[in-house]
Image 1 (cartoon, rainbow, N blue to C red):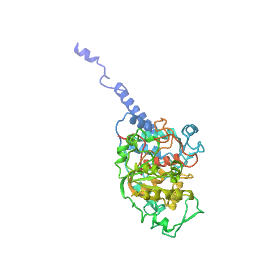
Image 2 (image 1 turned 45 degrees about the vertical axis):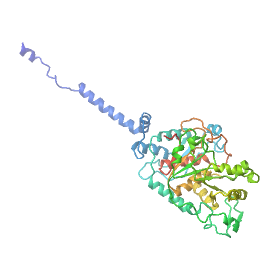
Image 3 (image 1 turned 90 degrees about the vertical axis):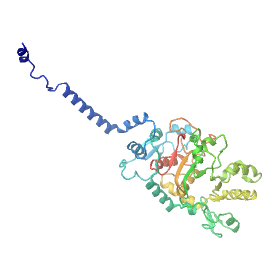
Length: 418
């Protein structure tokens, strides 16, 4: 019986000719090939799905962050939708005008789109910017150094940011920034108002914070982080009292004052001067800087600020932007795609900070009616008053800042601080 059973044994038993194991192996290989093709074709979407479930931050030069940075660098033209224009009070002349920053291309070793222009809408840029927030920002020393050298060649803030006795001697015929046909003779009286030399030098400060007044900073809780900077710039004497200090901080080393503020809020200082003096007290001993030589109208009002502070025996520094410096800055940013009647005070300060500081952080800079998450925000953190149409080119400025952040030149903060 045993031999009979053995005689009828299946000769193919123990072999797997296209059986279950072979089919399983073929299926695994096919699945792997399909997955590889999906990664090649749709790799960016896989990264995004992974990022959505990831808690923490990636290193600046990780593979995922290089992909995300490249997504932003690929955007050469940004289209503003008409809807966003009407809702947000952006310059209506922009409409669907593409914003084209003529920034340097991707860093060596990174891939870019060859030929043509890659256009996206603001909503798409917001999504890419949100994705990039999982990446820890790190300064790119080479990119930053190259950018600083470009600024040094064109503008040279450590020597020409303000009018000084050294760069504007007595007897000079100073040409205005806008009223180029107008000339102001530097008399002995005017000359006495200038500092002997520039109070700041190249890369004097390690970490600087430039604070814009955009609604993007509201509820950010960035006050402590801002106040920890070595030098803090602010624009146009914004409120920094207890109502706002948790978000914007209080430390101020330099604050700009637009002469229109003196004209509209303080009646050109022709009557009562103490209200303006008391406003400045909120900024402790910070220096103030005014565009006295932007046009002839600004000169007298700006000089009155200096006279007033002298009358109150204030030790606060009062400086006047050098008109040639501002002209050079305007030309520099025009090449980068920021073409406007007037650059914003914020961009002027960012430009100066890039030469004065080793590392520059921006807070409160945003030019769109909604934040990167699509939630509508006020124009300023303290009110919703819109700027004069057609004067600034704020979306162009922010578009450049986003690119500069991506390249590791500045750190643009648009979310809450931890």
